[in-house]
Length: 584
Image (cartoon, rainbow, N blue to C red; front, side):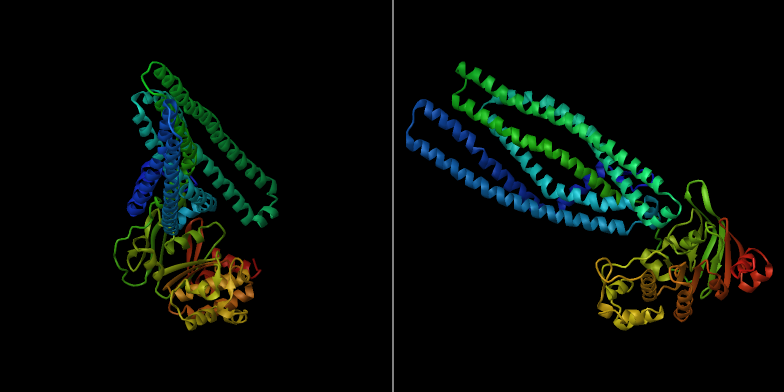
């Protein structure tokens, strides 16, 4: 189960977190039990000191020799060496286990992130996902590398030390129990509030990242429309919310930790008083009181670490819940195993909404013939891009169906779907790596001849050959910079290599100047021969070249026909055409 705040990815519940932790533990039983065994051995070796010191006090009280004292000191030193060696290897094994677990968790998170439906990512925004991949991963890394091993050591040490203290005499349990009520009350008070507080704190970081990302990405729009003060005000609101969230978690700590300090001191003081009383009554020896007091005093450090590190573990648990929540996003695909009988693409009475109760597509139906080229035109906000994304299988329709070869696009696994239909938008990304590595992402194992042919098809071969090292030139962040138009050509070359049957082009050449775009589209014509093409564009020369034109208005296809037919009809398309040529 998981919880989800509107606009954010889900957060896994406590049961899911515990189940995942148990699953990780079952993957590495030998390392886990080996580390625990070494920690127990180190803790047992540390227990020798109070017992030996108690015996030494008893021996001095009763009269002893220098040789006896030397022997006790020698044994004490030997136990110290054993404890040091065992602690060293216990910490080493714990660190190795922590790194292994963290690596596996990162791999699981990356797999879950890459499997997210595009629509979910868009709804959540980049800020939430960015915070999870950065701050939450870092916080969890700290918890696994440092906090969890230290907490494990502290727990083992506390348990073994308490058992050793009880072995001195039953009476030691009474002073120890006096510290339990404030400890339990404080822990329960804190744990009931801490996780929600830290989750809220992380959510505010996501909101800050989202606002900053939106402001930076839309900097030109912000400047053009004079939205600077409004964006600053939005950032201030996010920062204020983060301030109050952090202030709340700080309040929890300022109440919790002083309460714990009292819980630590009560058992030590009570042991001295009660043990001293029993000694005066002749019930216990001075050595036993000394050993018991030292054992109880030794309990303070591990218990303090348990409580202190618990705060870090709460942060880590909150981060883990956020990371695991990504895997709990429901899949928008319902794979049926059916195979398409052909490449006929069809939308039947499709309706779709981004917000419940507000459809942006209203009963759209469209049959796309195999090898046909359809241009979708219409005013901004009419639903062209939304319809294109449904035809490419990015979003499932709310009602109705989009099929290829008689099989719903949502019934096909993503890898199979992309062999039938692919979407190319004006958004693109150049990854860090060589030019060749950027291109073969679309078809691993593609030869250099295949890569060069794809580049030639999109008119990019000349400038790629002109790069200092050709296909081996490093590009992306930190590498050789490419222009927006060149990056778009790289994206189109990937598409040529992927070789899908149907292409949905959503303003795919919008960032290239009109003359270059026209030339690029002519170059693509030969490559796209025999493929089905659905082009969403504002430039009407694309519509003129299409087999049919679909005019989208107010979430409906208002006109459908060839360019000549629609011009002759004198409707919306004819008006657009006249306006395009300056005759409106």
